[in-house]
Length: 526
Image 1 (tube, helix red, strand yellow):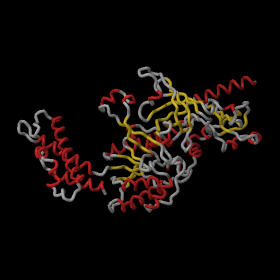
Image 2 (tube, rainbow, N blue to C red):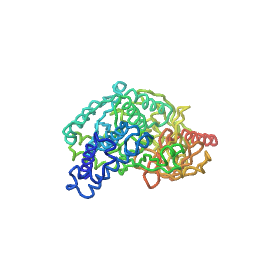
Image 3 (cartoon, rainbow, N blue to C red):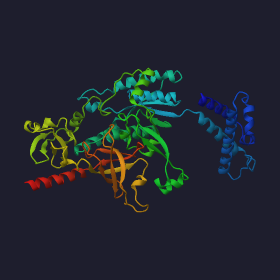
Image 4 (cartoon, rainbow, N blue to C red):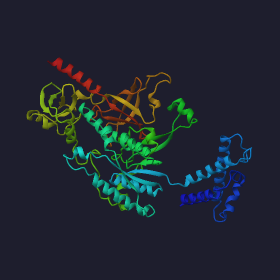
């Protein structure tokens, strides 16, 4: 109610100034406006002071604009040659600025048909945002139709129902729903990456690419090209964003000077729900992208969101959460890979002694640390000596290496020390603690970090030592991890603050080191 009253008073002040010359506004006594408007007797002392403050702000803007726009304008707002058009133009800019402050911020809401994005939409409406919903059609229905049905039509129907239901909190009018087809862009920017990484034997992460390249990538480009204008783009992700002042040491000199020494950047934090936190999937977003983003669910636990869905009586409140990759629906990932890559059989080799213990159908069906399902491609005699784990892959020879001694000291180093590449930082630069003396490029300090090796609640601790130009580095974990697969993202967090700092990708050098040690071991035993 306080905020509504403030906006109402500001709207009245804006109306009072409309059509008034800059000279008259400058000559106005700020404390007298409330009386002239007939409000002094009904407003508290604090509110009356607020009205006077609004007048002073507008007068200050007029003087600043006049001083900056022309040296031929007098202090009273009139021009030296008697032409008052410039002053009136300045007054209009000031009243337009006042109008702007009462305008509802516009938001493009990414709606999927799930409970999370639907609750996020309703929260935005209740926070007085002007919301337009967008459904991104990225299903690969043509390519995957032989594998099963893609439920995009069901999702779109649910989105429509959610938008129509929103009329109760949107002034009796449903939220506009737009459908944007980005299937082509998705194939080029996400599917191609996924297939190429898998074919190389690496472990891709399409969800990270979907967020950085599609949802907050080509969708933002589409908005700009379409001529639409939105203040923000929102989604149902579980993550927190905060504005933060960055120390001058954290930015380059030109950026610091261009912003008058006051540089603000977006800071990404984990959500309070450790299971649902999705900061891992958002680690590749840039400052430009984050500056346009809102995460309405950032402060909520999943159970609270479910409760809100019931409270809002959403038509999809009982809909289960979607599982798996966003573009596959009910299609299994292995079936998706098979449709693009087919099979390429190779040996399954015991990493301890070099014995062939099975035959696989393709490197892309297996990932480091995998236990479930590996027995299906091994001989019965070998399976009986399990459990077996995938420990490495040799793409040049199409070999999958396995071991039934994965928890022993033989693999302690391979499970705790590795190299990362393509290291990127959300702020644009590595943390101060990681950088050596200013001016000495390539001089890095070992820095302690919290990390996520994969999406989920598990946080691991360790150190990162960058090298060279800072785009790669070495990581040492305090404890062994379940499986370090090249291509997999490692996301960095500041210890104790839950702030997501950036990420890197596990390098293939991790395999190279293992295979070198393996060949030395096999060579010495033969």
